[in-house]
Length: 134
Ligand code: SF4
Image (cartoon, rainbow, N blue to C red; front, side, top):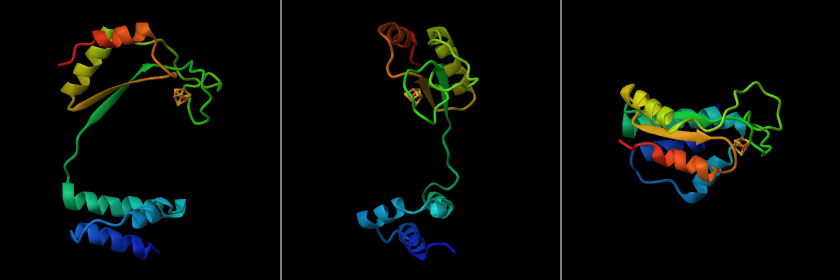
């Protein structure tokens, strides 16, 4: 059974009767995992009301993969875990730019460069800065 308090909050937003309170938002944030799908359903209703079917596409590239010294338990990029993830240093500026143009041609309006590790090296930053923004 869906949480009726959550339904009421969603209806309030959908019917533009005002925003929910901070306390109500915190109540939703504290919902148990058994209510996650209900919240996703209600969020979808709110999105439909205000954004209809508009979407924007974004893309990411794994520009530097694996070998991370950190030990984040969920992450396949960590050197502490034995995964079969591909490992490589930062891709070239040409590759980053070429991929950006490809995803733009495919309809992406946003393109993010994601790297493993705690920080880029000075050389990595130089490489990223060579990518021409268009
Ligand atoms: S890449 Fe990021 S999330 Fe993954 S282990 Fe390293 S610091 Fe953690």
